[in-house]
Image (cartoon, rainbow, N blue to C red):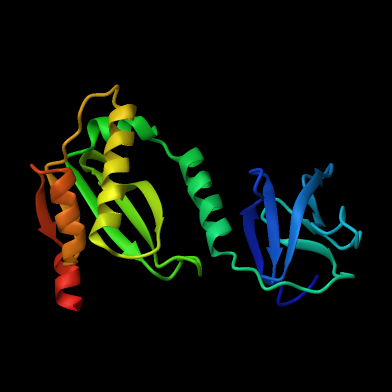
Length: 211
């Protein structure tokens, strides 16, 4: 087996499974073999280069065989966005609670936070909203948004979209969360109060202690 091989699982623009090797080469799913292993061909195999490189992975996404005979230059891919899209889709498919039910039955509290670690190079942050199901003692992610800044108007547009989507999922019954939990960024709380005027803003103690 090939050593020191970094395998990222992603998906193509058409929503099909895609493998990225060492953040330099992309492989599209080709076919499944009788032993359930999958064969992926380099994305350049249909282009002028007609690259013959391929990789075979077992059902645990472990490398069984890697033909690394690429006949074209490598590319340094920013895989964060495509990987994130795949994880979101995979998480939705595996979720035990339907998306509409999250808004219908668990909308009293909304938890929001921005993360910069997984943000694509062209953006500033990935902004995440979650809801909490008390009887299950679990948080469920309800949205991911890729934002180019952290301005109040941007957050306002985001909350407007979330409100519209939530109402659509809830048969157009208006949803007004009782509490919105966030860090001490004023742009977030001001935008939230504009869209959800009756919502209480509750600031996160963890962010306060680590500010």
